[in-house]
Length: 475
Ligand code: 5AD
Ligand code: SF4
Image (cartoon, rainbow, N blue to C red; front, side, top):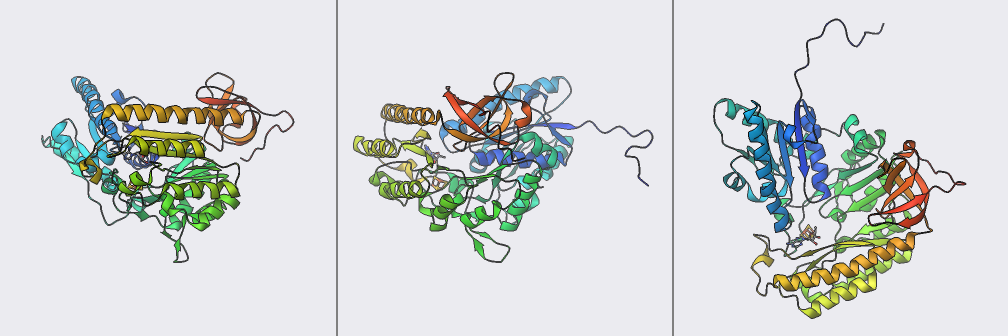
């Protein structure tokens, strides 16, 4: 006998609380935001895209450069205004700051911005529900003091956070992030990450396989493995041995439904032989690598404590290209690091000219409190930084345009993720993460199809399904 799902009059569900989460910075924050949303959905929260409607606003912040960190405070001003409007209507808003600014500044955030109720560091997200309960208790007792947790606990937050939920992940599309490693032990002289995210920690392989299988079961076709230093991955395998990133990639490639794998962000010092082999031999691993170099000058690389030279970086690119000629690269660059001369900068421009990048991120050096570079002599004037950044971005922009133009006429496999800019169009990503738009029906969304690239626009490529091939569907 089957029991009907609903019987008789039911007691009304309590009205759901809503949460608005805004992520700044890297993809790891995007992943963390999703996991926080999953954990809060167990507490009865539903996500809203409208900050003004939310009972709980979480800003998941980035501390990597000063501009990113300061953005939090201007946004907090807007959130406070929205909260005051809600209060005048008899409702309240809990304001939470998460992420790396929370970790770096802790209670200082509440001193600067007293409207903030809760500050939670990236290693404490699993304690968010308990912290919210504490905020609620304090507020019924009439206490308005913030709750702060920026501890690096011994327990693993990932095992305490719930797995992604089916309903949510389907809504999030066929390309997903999966954090496999967190923290960094490299201590590049400019970087706050070792202080905000802590020491390197790799998640156990069995859990990662489980999470990948769950994602695949929800329609995910592409997984980007995330870590601040992802190729330093050294997770404990089900066999009790330490697995490398290459071994993990090979195992995840066996998960039915997972057609594409990527990883980011990596360090040139951790490009192991087995990882080169994976790039050369594992078809699921996309022929595109984001490999930050920061500078083309050995002198600057040494002061940056990068522990690699420009020649070493070039040799990595050559070796990858030798075994996989269709491989393309992106990178991160910092201009105007303390002591950088015109000659050092010329070395960076020469490296870029020699390698040819498909895309790149470049930044003016921004002194971060507590990092060794912040107190180095010879800080480079802003006007010099701006001039160098403009020249570098001009060259990188030309290279990106040339790379996109060279794709015209090529057949590329595109994973379609969403509706396109215009009706009748759908949009997805090429193996090189280029956005690709085609005219096609929505039912291709969620699958991979081979597309002939017909043209380039400012932000995306345009393509068509070759009539004869029609599709190489996988889902
Ligand atoms: N100033 C400028 N750029 C920085 N990055 C990290 N720290 C700084 C800083 N203090 C850049 C690096 C890194 C990327 C994520 O951000 O290029 O690879
Ligand atoms: Fe920061 Fe990356 Fe250097 Fe680690 S390797 S300190 S995350 S730039």
